[in-house]
Structure formats: structure tokens, C-alpha cells
Length: 103
Image (cartoon, rainbow, N blue to C red; front, side, top):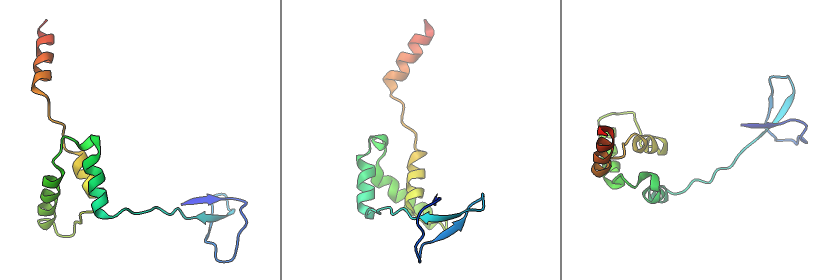
């Protein structure tokens, strides 16, 4: 939450006392939520995840969640799961590095 000192306070404003003892008005930030399908589409189009088969990973997440009651497939869960997927090494690049190390 953000606080602003010295703002005009109106009836109905949410207030909170800061650590300094002053009264602060709480500013609410409105974040627009995009639909679930648009969220998945944005992931599929994101270059950071181009090495991942998103549809396959979503199915794997569903299976994992079935085996772990109490867990939910939230956006944070999905991004965390995908963030742990490693980028596969390019075999040609690996060979070139090995050749350079021999010299």
C-alpha cells in the first residue's frame, strides 16, 4: 500500500497511522486483470519461454496439482513452474566450447 502525507482527507478515505505517528491516506492501486486465456497467450508469445512447450507444461501442472491437494494453479504458480524450466543446451555450442577448452 502507498501512503501520502499531507493529502486532503475526505470522509470515507482509508487511513493508517505511519511509523512516525502521522496519519496517512492509503492509496489503492487498481490493477487490471487480464482473462486467463490472454495470460496463457502472453506467455506463449514471450521470448523468455520460447524453449518451452507451454500447452504440455500446463497439462503437467494440472496433473501435479491433482496429486497435491490444497495447491492451486495460480498465475504465480504457473510463472514459477515455467521459470524453473532450463533452456536446453545447443549441442553445437557445447562442442565449440569443448574444442576451445582443448586449445
